[in-house]
Image (cartoon, rainbow, N blue to C red):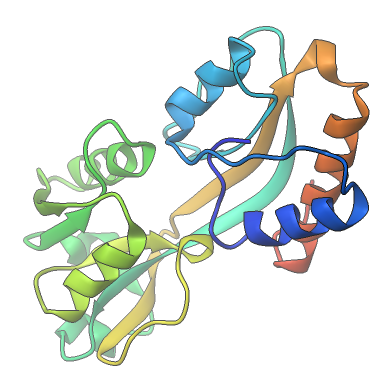
Length: 206
């Protein structure tokens, strides 16, 4: 499996181990772009990936997908920031800010750059880090603001608040596998568990 979300995959893996103890399940975390390529080449069997409506992930012919729901993305900022006083932050208010984001080539970075450019500004990304927890720590230190998916974070530390953005950034979450493998018991069982777990998280499958 590739591209496991922090909020979803631990439960999926635990359920699979309980239901299918003989199944050899392994996890590899990477960005959706290479994840889709690995599935297409047959190097992994199943990927949990995400994309944005404005930055769709290209899915090659021969792959199938199961939509698992959506993952809202919140603005994280220091509690003393003036934007923290707002119930929701219009995207226009994000101009002129220092950003903390994942590195270029990551689908979340691509979305941030595209969104701010459409709002009339080239984003000032000062800190580029791969882990959401590190991004949150940088926000807590007052070094900038960031956009972090809800499935990608745990409890926020003191001094960091989350606010929705208007219009709301939302990731689409889905599973990818090779169509020719659709009848394999391991695939069907894993997909069933993913569907159940996504519903428990409040991201119902469509």
